[in-house]
Length: 293
Image (cartoon, rainbow, N blue to C red; front, top):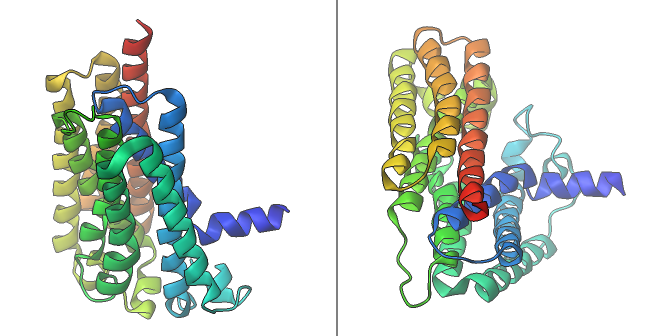
């Protein structure tokens, strides 16, 4: 039972999916409407399902290339534990369809379209079209998470005025900028893997004098943007969490700008995770405080 659960988590990339679902909840919390707790959780589950379908397709499509990388060679499709066949794309398409129906039932048409665009971006645009062709792969692929924020905001917007406000748009932009330095930092650590697999991540195909400043400039911009919601109504709780996550990420990316070692890169990767988690927690706690008082 536990082995089957672990395999499901791996195939659907539910760890990444949990972050995407959290991004959708951030959108719900800042969308300006009242979706209700149960509907919000149903919508987050729908986003998790759509993300899982896209992640599963990514693993199925990439099974041959995953065998070339130490980090991914033990995945179920890459290792041969699960044999390839049409049943898998069909199953994942059914999962995506069910997730979209679930999203539509509580969030409406615009939110559902945005959930679909997020899955399409990761499953097709990133995986099939960009991953092995350009260093822009994770830059454009990062839009998948941004769509989740916008989808959450659209789900809670009043049907009479389905306009997405400035806060979720800003947070979607923050997440769009967050994705490249997050994965580029990991690419420094796993550079040989990406070279063997022919994936042109920026730190793999350029020198540190190029990718170091690019990562740092992304982090500077996203941290500055993360403070802008304070001007549009988010309160001090959000501000504290935004600073608590942003400052360490800035410092670690500054160190990476001057020291391209694997250890510093891994610390920057972890700092990016902490920044996203703290930013999301700040939104949820700040809005929760407002609802309570």
